[in-house]
Image 1 (cartoon, rainbow, N blue to C red):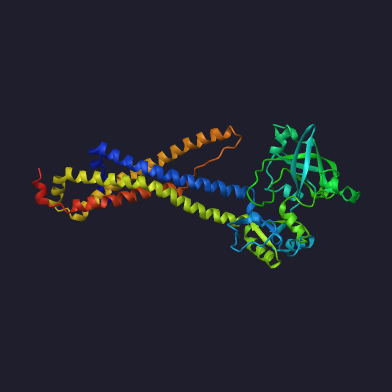
Image 2: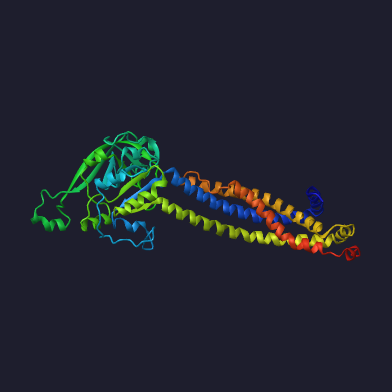
Length: 454
């Protein structure tokens, strides 16, 4: 028999038991729908994470740290990503100074190197005031993918008296619309240690919190942009609320530390910057730059390493989600076996006639296997449609509630071509496996007994 004849035979037999076929195919539909939706959810999460890293160009960034600096933020269970034990906060080593910047700038694949300079400041527009962290970044970084502007433009020069503020800060300063903050004057007040007029006789008052050796100065900047960025965990190049170019930042008197690690570094005699941000032209240069940093006596943190671990985690998550969907597929396979066995009992005489006129056992097997595969194909197509429809409803409902919190629309499900074709092929494959026992049972039917069955 030709394959087309097997298909005609299967279609005719399945039409004769419409209700049973529909119920069995629906079981496969539910199983494949659950499997497709769960794997599609895992694929959607993986795509969203990958696009976030790529959109912000974070895979091209490496943070270079002195020995012991900020290592607490880089570790998992007391170890760095590379598996070595972290150095103590008081470990000494080469300084991250201007000479180190020049060394990294000379490396192949390095586009930009800028130091990690943050300082606390009181920022105000009109009567509204907020205490936030200000960060110094070059104009080239302000114009890169690391800064996503909701309104305005990045500052064009490193010596421009301009700032970019975060959207949350703009809202706190009274600007519901980010565009309304652009062009306004921002007053930035910083504090610095001033021992010029220090009198040892005032030590008691200083310890009591009075007459502290602190000077406060105020500077004015024009707001040129409002950023939409949301900071990632761990040390990343951009994670402050106020960004200003290095030119005017160099004139600001400020505290030489912003966190406890800077104090440890200063107490150990450390000098230079707390960290350097290295921007690469391609992630392909990351390993070479990290190796060079290690040779120079520095430690590094690269989000590309964390991204690799995230992708590995997604593989296990996809497997777990698929395992849950497999439970429904197993139940559907039992339904197929039951349907095909009942079909054998109902068509016992028919099978006997086919064998009596010369049909070989292999032909009988193929007839029932094609019927099983047909049920699997119908269930696979229906399951793909069901999974897609359910995921669209879930996606719409979730985004409806998130939109009320100001969170932009996100696609939580993804159905690549391999998943769609694989779901249908998997349904057919499971159905064929479920049909093996009924097919072999039908092939063993004794024609004499079958003809006398009625």
